[in-house]
Length: 223
Length: 406
Image (cartoon, rainbow over all chains, first blue to last red; front, side, top):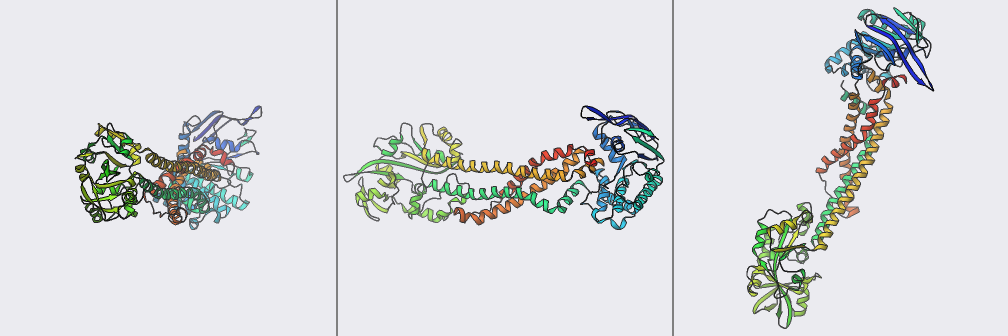
């Protein structure tokens, strides 16, 4: 087991009452799983993704990652876990617009203070892996949407994380490109044994999961 | 890739914003440098003009009053000549020139005149109006002037000329004030009998509007012999730096000359001190204004930059950037802006001072190189102070709130 959630509750104050964005959600993820999280808008999918590694603090419940509780640790330690063990992929790619492709990919390594030469070599290798070795000096605006998402994928795996958190990674892509990206994520999952948790609206994307969670009104209704 | 490189790339790729961010601080520093460059020269000019008013400290015998000094009564008390040496050999700073003198009212024919014994070199040096009439004295240091160059326009650099001035007032020579010359009908190169001794009038002094117009000046040692007051003087006039006066020069003089009365010629000293204080206050007011205006401008720029980069901050925090990394990103940027603003501001302000000084203030302004260092320090301080609060807010952003905007 790499990740476990126990009775996760996240409440938001709204007018005179509380809304349960996550209502006692429990799940267990094994190392190497490809988990898809589906559900209608407002069901709590993205909240769950952000809450797991402390980007949103829980109201109650436990989260255990790699054998250790992480819901009650300091921001500093959570930041350290995200830096070393987690990769994020977002719907909007979230690339830094004034940095080149390779510079964007080097950022997670820079945050870990890895020597510059090694940063460059590793980023170059990963960009080759995602098929962008001929685009390393390009700025994000000079790339297609599919290429930008591949840069984001390269950035999420360059520091060899244990887990990738993907929030609607194909939301901004056409069906063909979506399939390409999903196949690529599957490849990463298989070849590198990296656990993936992917939030998606798309039933096609959900079918790529080896484990499926369906949320509705903050509760897991089917897994 | 490092955070420093990230900052440099961001600055370089957003040049338009960089220029607008730099503009406020550069102009602020330029204004201060220009004002200071002009002010320092103006201050020297004012100090030199005030020095033209003459000595500003009087050392009198214990029982003497200022009236005694001016009326020069026959029985006015005296003090030993050794006191001059006592001041000279002390470590007291701020004594720019000394003029010991022995003054007595005497009769020449049936006219009452004041005979004053002087040491020519120092006496002439303390009377700039005399120097401008063609008498050359010892080097004059302008009291309160900040640099040695303050005296250059007096043409006193030639040491040989100064020595010549000492030698020219021989024991039988004297100088006559304009009023006494009229009364006694004296002319240059004429002769006068003073207490049985013949003197040659080497110069009729120009009118100064002071008691000096009514005096005859001769060599101090001659006057001491004539009056039978050897090694005695009526007073020591001192041209003291007004800053030193305000910092306790009078007390120091009293300590080494305990049986004397040390007093200032109040009007001159207070004018000098007030002028200098006014200059300092104006600069201080400008400094405070620039600090606030510059700080707010930079703060505003950094805040706009923080807002523009909210997503980027969120991405970095999501990927594991600590709050300290966010601080580093924005404060490093502020530091770079501060250094660049300081250098550009110094250059712009110096050029403005040098070019506009002669037109606006009628003075020649030269670059003051030490201001470069102060410009950078001030600019960096303003830039960092202005950036602290926006940076603090940037580091406090919740990563998820920025990510959800995606």
